[in-house]
Image (cartoon, rainbow, N blue to C red; front, side):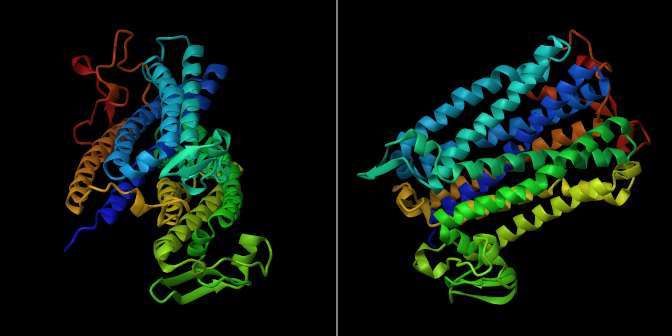
Length: 479
């Protein structure tokens, strides 16, 4: 069987970006949550806010580390698998990635150490400032990355001469037509991810009766935030969809499973797209609703996939179902946010076991929704790498063989599997220990011995007790 380097390279990049995306989207929201906790601790002097901040800072250390490790290697793929694209887009993407390093990485590197290791070693105001700067750094980083990614979907401010993109307007290229919607959509997704993870972990502790007062505060904060942001995300998604229909109508057609350009298009709840025969099987839909959502008119015209040749159509099945997974989980998030509001009377939101168990499940749904959203965005752009200007085949490294692509793909899967396993191990240890007192086993002379030591809190389980609620910090041997 002949190995296709293009297909293997696409699978490799899809695997790497899917693995990487879940960490920044969590760390962006979590960094802001930590900054808020530090601000509350600084203002009120309540030790519960400091305990919550200390605990979630440990989680942030692991997630941030995994995000950096998994993200650094992504840039290498541009040179190994997509060298034609790298050469063609260097005039724009080269400076964009440099701006991220200069404005975001340097900022985070300067203050991350203070946040992780400076508690009780620097003034409280300095520690708060470090937390704010780390949060700001995550937003700056996402700004440059999403601008570059959006430019690949809606290229502007450039012209293609002799196979090379030349920037004609930096402002138009950076603030390209889809960037504002994509950036807002991703930022809110980050807050939703952080909010549901914190809510889920807090619910787990409350079910076990651990640190009840602190976790009630954390859960209450998250539920208020989710109540406003979950519906807001639906509004931003609608605006983003309208922008996508204007600039990438074929992607919208794939999302809706619509083959013929027509009016009064139904919203398909279920269908099996048959791309070979350019039709759907077993359709179940709501009449006219797709037209109304996409055009805000009940008889609005929705573009069809047959507007372009078959070879210029994206894989419809993946885009169609990924979109429904993302939207379905978004509606579920809104439902839980509203349920939290209804259960606030008499504090039922932290007493109802079914609600707390549901929040535990909901803690993983934002990651699934984010990956599904990236599938819609990136696969829906196929076969273009720079929409309408450079396709994927033109961007591939000419000397790349199928065997070489397969070898590196296997290598990424193995290495990322090890990284993920180590990260999960550290996260579980942090969760098992919980919100232990800062004073337990900690001395002013203690200094971390390695980068992840801020998240590594050794613990021991008392003999005869299988319940992790009996875990206690250990500070033996100078660790």
